[in-house]
Amino acid sequence: MYVEDNPLNMRLVRKMLSAAGYDLIEAMDGTSGIEMARREHPDLILMDINLPDIDGLEAVALLKQDPDIACVPVIAVTANSMHGDRERCLDGGCMGYIAKPITRIELLNTVTYFMQAPVANMPMASSI
Ligand code: MN
Image 1 (tube, rainbow, N blue to C red):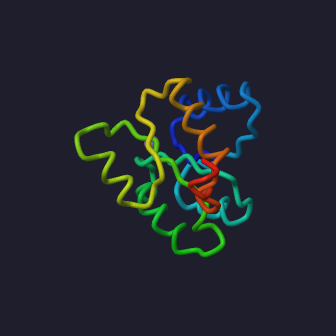
Image 2 (tube, rainbow, N blue to C red; image 1 turned 90 degrees about the vertical axis):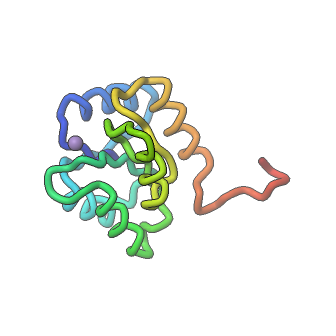
């Protein structure tokens, strides 16, 4: 699932992920993103941080309070690539971080990693 208010970024990610065989569901603001996550229980959430209603990290905090979806990994997607921003996203409950402009290699590397190794089922050291 991708929560993103910019249609161009949404279209870009939709094209890249569908070409790689992933199904994408889409929300354009934080509130509908939270509702969609509760309803659809996605495997992974890509979260734009600058959203028109609530801040993306505020949405992540709300998702993490919901026991049904707290285990779904969230990847922050943001243009705020200033120093410290990555830490702010990770401290806010995100498992990873993709900087805009989004590149295909970074998107697919990150998505593939989290789709193959769900954080809720972290493998034992011997099976890594
Ligand atoms: Mn945005």
